[in-house]
Amino acid sequence: MSIIRDVLIWDSERQNAEAGDIVINDSGLVSEILPPKSAKGERLFDGGGYTAAIPGLVNSHTHVSMTLLRGLAEELPLMRWLQTKIFPVENRLLPQHIRSGGELALLEMISGGVTCFADMYYFMREVAAATVGAGMRAALCRGITGDDSKKLNENLALADEFNGRDGRIIVQLGPHAPYTVPRDAIEKIASIARDKKLGVHFHWLETEGELETFRDEYKISPSDYLEGTGLLAVPKLLLAHCVWHPVDELDRVKRDNVTLVHNPKSNLKLGSGYAPIKQMLEKGVNVALGTDGAASNNRLDVWDEMRTAALMHKGYHKDPTLLSARQVLKMATVAGASGMGFERVGLIKKGWHADLALVNIAGPAYVGADVTNLPEFLVYAGSSRDVRATIVGGKILYKDGRYLTMDRDEIISKTTEHRKQIVKT
Ligand SMILES: [Zn+2]
Image (cartoon, rainbow, N blue to C red; front, side):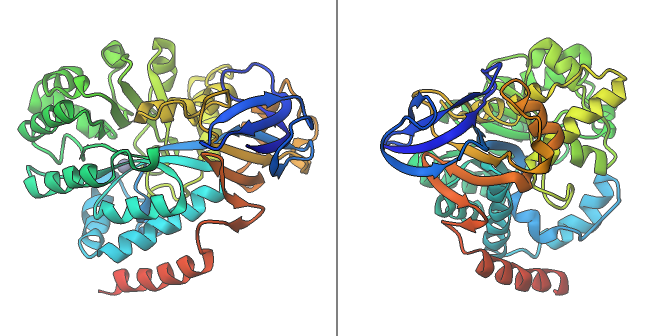
């Protein structure tokens, strides 16, 4: 038993926050929540009455190793950005670059209270090993482009090696997007996903041009494509972006196994548009939140993503009641974790995994925060800099500026060297 003592607890099932002690059992699960300063046992963390405990944040769409490409190409439209700037450098990346870039991303996310992420890239054994080493939770896939059985086999080998590892790694299949993978290859991947009970992570209608291609070239509605390829029937489907998913087809993706991932800052930065999140939430579709890669955001900061999401739709629709702080916190916690297929992750309750972000609420921006308004303070006034500790499965990964599972200085010096290598060659 270990105790997180005297914290103000909030998750998306609670109306008001609750002062208490969180008791964690030896399996890393929350076993009890007791009145503040009453629990007996080893003290993992003392909140001192000025610390909020919220579920660990979940980044539901990213490409962690792209931290090495951060700042490499700015202010271009998606297709030009990808084809002239990103793909040529990606062709030069080696496994050691993927590893170090991934570790750099984990440093950034862990210090911001992120405990779980969904990632698509290549040389994914490196990302999986970095994730296991850091002690985070992740849903990982090998990004597949073209009708490429080598890439698909790498994805399947990743599943054989890592799926279910420590209860923290889920392996999904990763067809990149409708415009990079032919339809019959998508059908094959979806069929394998169903047979092997694997989820699928897919880029979906990020730009308006993709929607036009469905209309003008494929001559099929996007939802008919999702259904016809078999993607809608895979165990878990993560659809990243969905900026241009037709509003009148949201009923088709309102399914327990389908999650739409909102990436507001990447969509804004690449000029892709405003995803119809208002209508998705009204329809009851499961919506999660992601940063996308660091080359198109350029932060891996879920706090920043929450604040941007909460603000941008209010302005766009001229309606301040849209996307409440509580809704975006749900998107950034339990909605993402369940969308990836993690069970009992994303709430602070008995029997659920003790994945937590502990947040200092003693600073100037939190004067006035109380049990009734904590979520609004966190989203509108808080920031990732307020995170004091990040905990996954009852184990502390980060506390008061120190990493307990990673060597920060070594990772930064290694990635500095790697960055020079990839831009030079
Ligand atoms: Zn992406």
